[in-house]
Length: 574
Image (cartoon, rainbow, N blue to C red; front, side, top):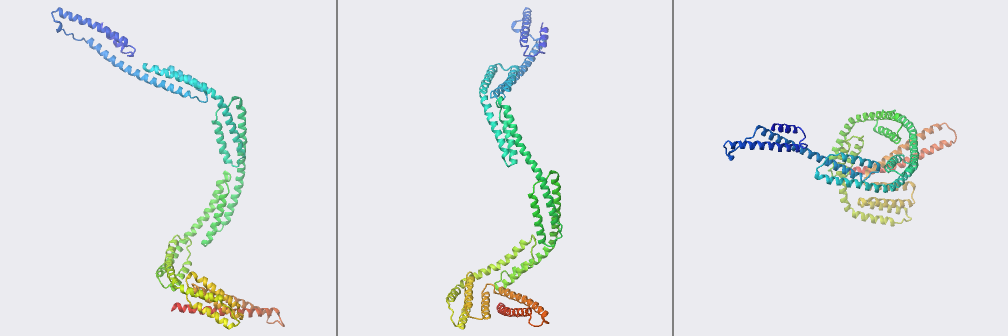
């Protein structure tokens, strides 16, 4: 009997543990019953054989152990089955919750109500097909599911009520988009029109449906507005292509212009290269102002233009590379000048050192930088040395200005007396008085630099005015007035330079007049055989006499200037 029960239990163990639980319990009860009968029989036999009840021990049989082993195996399988079931129920619960969530999302409704309803039906089918859940979760989830479906149908009713309003509103919005597209036909900016029409098309697409009965009419109006606007844009680009052809001709002309400019690039001076460079850059700027050409020619003309530009600038680069050696020579010369200036910068011989530094400045100018990158450093060093001296000299003479205040007051008195002076009928007395004014003026010495020009201009202008009023010969008046000019130069800040320039100017005048005299005397040779009175001969002779008189006058002036220069040199040397 036990063997049969064991066989049945082994067979049940091959099936799903959760499905055979009742059968296993029945076999367990039946096996227990058989075991109990065997136990009682063995016990009675023990007693019958004279054994005592409390000493009876019933050993388990191999079948008993095997059955118990199979039961333990069944319990383990049942536990595993229950765990799987619980896991499946949890998974099914999540599926059902997800279905409820999706139905909840549908309850918010999209614009496509039909699609929402179809989706609900699919979700309801999925609900039915979903597996079992835990019994204590079933009621809760089923209630939530039913409530969500009810909400969907409730919201669907509200949505249909609102849909009619939305269709009307969408119609108005799309009509407004059509009007916006039409306004683009009047804009001057094609780029703006292109950008805006894309935005308006996106805006049109984003607006929901309109009433069916108005859709075809609206769609036709929208298409017509688009076609007209795009027609204008296409027209613009057609004109643009035509303009590109014009631009191509303009750029070809600029290439020819550039060729003419760069035809000669064997230039010898920096200024010539700079001039030619400015011309090339001007053409480059013109090029930039011309728009694009056709696509097939744009790169071609650009490469040709750039080739000529590169050829020019490569030649320029080669030229300036050759200047480096010259720059090095100039730097050596200028370094020597700087050393001389730095040796003089602490000198207090204000007159002589100033002249020496100014000569060094003239020497500096003979060696222009021509773009040498070291030039700013050299010039800064040279200027520092010069400024050190001239700033010290300025400070020195600034201190002297304070000591010149007394001279200023005395010269102000002399100027006031001169302004008040009245000429008399006695010419000699007037001449003597004016000379005394000049002598007194020169004897009073220096005045502060800030007042020097004002006083000298006022004094000598008044003096010229009084001399002009004197009844003197033209020559005498000219001599007196020129002496006044020399006195004015002597009273200036740099009398030596000004008198030297005046002497050079007078010498140049004399040379020009001598050239004219030689020309007139050559012309007189043509008249040596003429007879009688010849008016042309007389005119040439008069011109020669006039020019010789001018030379005597200018020569006298130059002697006066040279004499004063000699006095100045003696003063400097002493």
